[in-house]
Image (cartoon, rainbow, N blue to C red):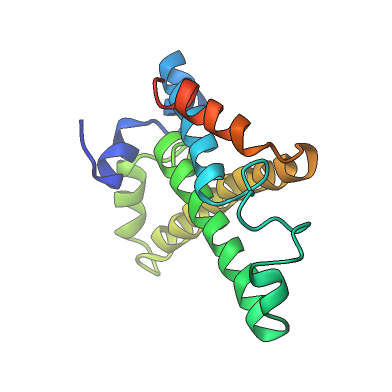
Length: 167
């Protein structure tokens, strides 16, 4: 019912059985479609037809070397991190700590000898939880790159236009 990331996270629970990917079979199908579309948009295997490593006659693999070549791969891995972070936020519960709700965060902000120290600890824990979920998705993307061969352009068009767009 919202496009706000905070609203999407509030609609999900903190526990894995409350995440959107597990609450509804249609949400799981939406996650798979979203994940495949992210792979295709990021030119990742099996959709890396424009700039594949085996294509040595054109593209940035033959044009650049050294520092500029390193920037291309840095941007590619940054794109992977953003794709994993968006998938984590939309479908995997984001940065919610499983045992803590809003009242725990409010109580941690308040009293004690060092007020707010518990709140910062919960913030660091939620950041670590988010990073670990995103790293799991990132490892899945890298695993797919290692395991799947590249598809032909006609197979990609058939997959996208025949199956993904109608779904």
